[in-house]
Amino acid sequence: MIKRTIPDKVISGFNAIRYKVIEPILLAYYRLKHLNSYEDKKDSPLISITIPTYDRGKLLVDRTLPSIFSQTYQNFEIIIVGDCCPGDTPEILSRVKDPRVKFINLPKRTKYPADPTLRWFISGVDPSNHALEIAQGKWISYFDDDDIMAPDYLESLLRFAQEGNYEFVAGLYEEERDGVRSVRGQRTNAEPEFGGHSTWLYRAYLRFFKYNINSWRKSYNCPQDIDLQLRMMSAGVQMEGLNKIVSYVRPRPGLKTVGLAARLVGE
Image (cartoon, rainbow, N blue to C red; front, side, top):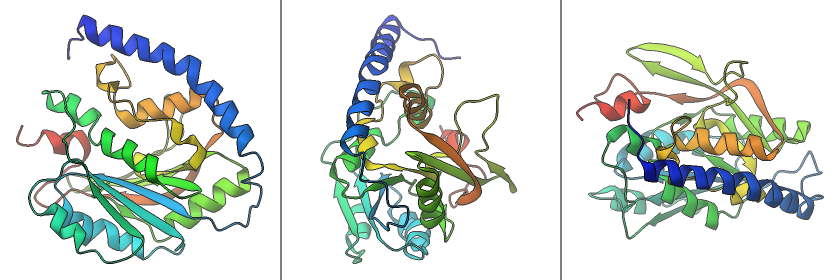
């Protein structure tokens, strides 16, 4: 168990109060401002797919991007933001010529905690927030740089959100650990969060919900995606889960597991 310091408690406590007060007000404002923008349930708007990355250029090009390019829904842009990428990742990504792909490499690496678990909790926060700022789409979908989209990922989530008039939707995902595949992301009474980070689709006016660079300081719900989704819930965002697999989480080459367990290999 990681011991929380007094600064951790003060910073996380202050942020909790700040989010609880400000975010519901901002939600009410932006919801009213965009009241009529999402009424057309047959609209085929631009979707911004945001992908933070660091050193997985080859995997992103070989595994993730092909699954996006082959979507049944083609009105999208892909915003890849590097966390001051090292090695050949910038060169590899610069060779992607599809005009829908934008690659921005931040000049300075995010300052992360030394502990690998805490570091994993907020991996890619700054690139993700930067991508939100420049996204042009009417809807936003986060996606990890080593995951795989089901062919109808975008279309299924978009139509589900439109038909139900939801502001945020998430689907199921299939992950593989030690050769065993399982379906994750179902809504349960035990946990308020649902879906997986690489199954999210939400209205672009929710971009004011920024990823919390200090979520690792909390004593619970520390991963950035859980922190963000629970803040959206608390503020009153209209959310629902799609009971359908929309993405696949597979081990990276040379590994047998995913998520935090994969990050800790070799640490």
